[in-house]
Length: 161
Image (cartoon, rainbow, N blue to C red):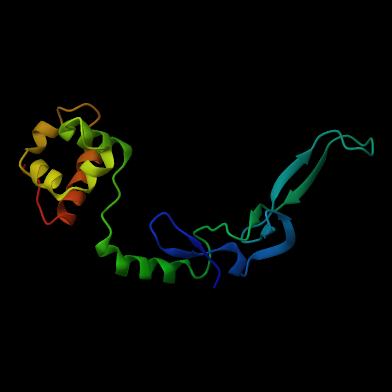
């Protein structure tokens, strides 16, 4: 199965192995390009055609490269199950606001944002601060609180109510 390297370190199924992908050939960078035929074509309008007949409508399917991927690949659910099985060793994703929040709370002028986020010590410090105090920090809304709770749980800690 052809796969693409995902941002989570897992390989996922790509267009190359999808039964809905119609290969056209090599277009650029030695990658095959094709059309995704998972769904019906969309309506494309060509303005001012060369035959002098005016505008023309036609059906088009999206162009994709062999290394592209989407959630419609028949193997995607199998890949997702494998990913979930292995995800216990991967820290939960923190959105931009949650990362900024942690950086604002624990930046000491020496550590980078990445170092602060990956530190179990940061998690221990955060677990000692009540959530009501978190909410006083700029951009700390319910989504950020939810992400930070999952992040603490990953580190085996609970948030103080």
